[in-house]
Each structure stands twice: as structure tokens, then as C-alpha cells.
Image (cartoon, rainbow, N blue to C red; front, side, top):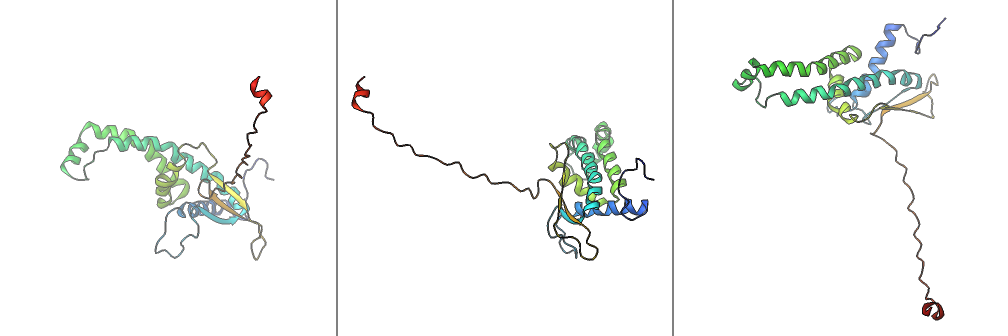
Length: 199
């Protein structure tokens, strides 16, 4: 019995389920960067096609990851303001490294580093975590949730007729309904009769 057990088994054991969800989540995140010279360049950025049940399972994981990265943005921006403009290993940088300002920078950047480590444990892909922090989280800085959209496809998968769906980021491929323009009526001004004009 599966009393109060959340989630779908997807025909796999628990370790394989987690590995599958990580791989689908990383595949969607990695479509955000232009993969020049790679054999598996995505056709459309920010969108993958998968089965409907996999898309429904991976959406909560990805939304949690985006929320973690979005909440860590404030700490990262504050740490960037404290960092010196000098290049690494120069004399100015070494003096900053020995000063009290470096300890202040460490305290400020700590939540962002903890968030990156947590995302790395959830996703298991350093490149995906970097894309999440640099590209995706700033895009949703003012959004409280609902970062992903699932669109069911009409044609099932060939072979086993599994229902397919598109999993994509909100705000990238939004469909905007074009409202028809409001009609403008030209009302000719009628001349008033002489009796009404005099009174």
C-alpha cells in the first residue's frame, strides 16, 4: 500500500527516480545557454519535450531550485559590492585579503555559497547551478513562484503511446493574445436649427 506516499514511481526504484528527475531538470536548465559546437544543441531555448508524468514530477524540484537561487541573489549582490575592483593576486587584492573587509565579504557571501552547495546536492551539475544563478534566478527576481509551464501535446509518443508534454520556463515563450482594436465612430456634427440657436 502507498498510504500518504507522494510522487510517481515512474517504473523505477527510488535511486533511479531521483537520478531521472535530476537529469530532466538539468536538461531543461542547460537549454538556456547556447551550446555552440556541442552535438546536442537544443532546438528551442528554455523548453524540453518529455512525458506528462515526468514533467509533473520534475516541476516541483525545479521550482524549489529556482526559489533557492532567487533568495540568494541579495547576498550575492551585497558581496559583489564589497569586493574590490583589483584583479586577483595583485598587491591591492592581497592587502584587501588581509584586511577586515575580507572577513566582512566572507560573512556577506556565506548565504549565497550555502545556496549554491544546496543546489549542487539537489541537481548534481555545476554548470546547471551556474546557469541557474547567472541567467534564470535574476529573470524571476520579482516573481514569487510559478516559474514553469506544462503544455500537453496532442500526439502521444511513438512506440508506447505515452502522453507527451512540453516543459518550459514562463516568460520565454509566452503567448500574448492580441486584442482587436476598438472601433472608432465618426459622429458628424449636425447643424442646429435657427430657432434653438437663438433661444
